[in-house]
Image 1 (cartoon, one colour):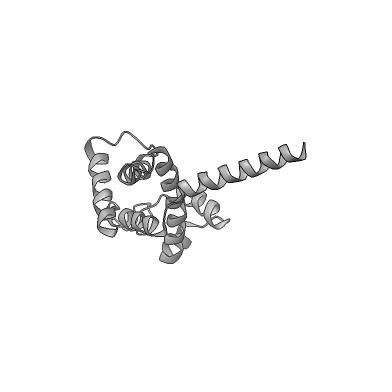
Image 2 (cartoon, rainbow, N blue to C red):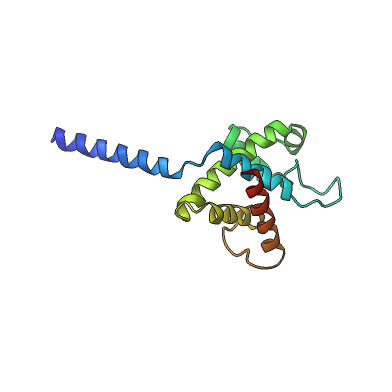
Length: 148
């Protein structure tokens, strides 16, 4: 019985480590995605457009993300006033989302970047095949390739 239990624990542990190893994106991939999103951020031309930081994030979004990544909610002003903190939060979220998309696309980097760019703009990983969203996704992919 003890041997069987040990085997299950070892097997589960190895499976878990293997799954994590397959889904861990590199720091360079995360940084490339973060910078691509920053560079592709729509410029509204208005200082009071309701979007914050170089990444143009909505207040309700940044509250959830900051709580997830920093274990505390940031105000839009706190997020806006610290590019270091904003980059830290965006990097955390990009790591999470890239890991999901690398797993979903069998580690296809371009497909993962496309999926995350679409999600960033629409909340969905697919459906950015035409119009403004398709152009935006292509812009992110191009900037990402330049970073990598």
